[in-house]
Length: 483
Image (cartoon, rainbow, N blue to C red):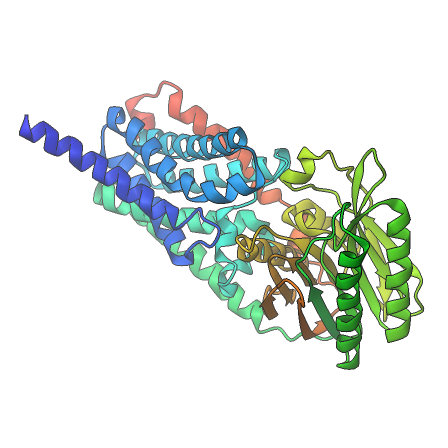
């Protein structure tokens, strides 16, 4: 009895350890190096224990990891949706790990090192294409500060980064659990080392490339205080006056282009027209390009816009947000479909709003249209997700070779170059707000491999993953198992 209890306790402790490690991986600010190791712990648990134990140990570890985001999800979604999101994340980890276990244990051959990374990339690719939040929270974004690692995104997008992370975890797990019993294991270890080393070498080489273009001084400005439909005129006037003052101060310091955040106010059409005139006057008086985000509600359907004003005060370009955050979906915001670019000083400036930049296909669409820099008004959630939102956005620049200037409420003000290097960053603030001045080399767009072919690698992984799933269940001969 004591022996059985000890064995059960050991299994529970193993699952808990794996789950606690996953909490450092799937949160809003993951620890980058843990992301390379923690999944290996879960895989080791799955490979080491018999199926009847793995089937409850893996879900237990997965749900422990997934609940790390419970508080954040509860801020943006109702409780049933929160529970559904955590359950879906738990099921995804469980499915991928148990399918990997089935194929690895059945065949125990060198090529099984690719099962786990291919399955993960396939799942990530399908989520990006099918879910309203895309592949938000992809493990690839956890490497946002590791510049040499993430340059491979210019070739294969997030799929390339995710593949390397998962491949390392898979190789570690196979080495520890199977070791010499893995047939031709030397091939698995050699290929893993070669792929990771090659990608790091490519990253270091790419980061050494000089940028040649127009040096432009950007001002980034945010005041977090909201202006809703019921805000008094006096309250709104105080905030707009502060914007006017800070815009003028940034222009005096040399700002040529100033970006304000998403939905600096939610207004009726009449008041939105008044704000349009006011912002146009600010652009004209300060001789700057000025972009601002504004929400408009006509009594039927709310909309979310980005406006770009020219130095003569005219409204040069408008853009309607494509992809809505959960609260906006709940309020049935209209969605846009057009891509907006405008030529400034000979370079193409693209407009997008916040969540739009979570979607690689939208980022690529701007790359195909020749964007040199993206201006992105944004609104993050309660200062919690600023890091992951900013790094996710920076990935679009790496994938497509353009710079990004992002102004967020309740988040981060930042600018990044085509290699994902943060040129400047600060946290937004309530009144009197916060601003940032940064020099950006606006270079002609780099036509990366990813821009040209898109997520071809991810789509190929979907096909291969389907084959792996079939391999896990079809009857096999002893000879086939030894391949």
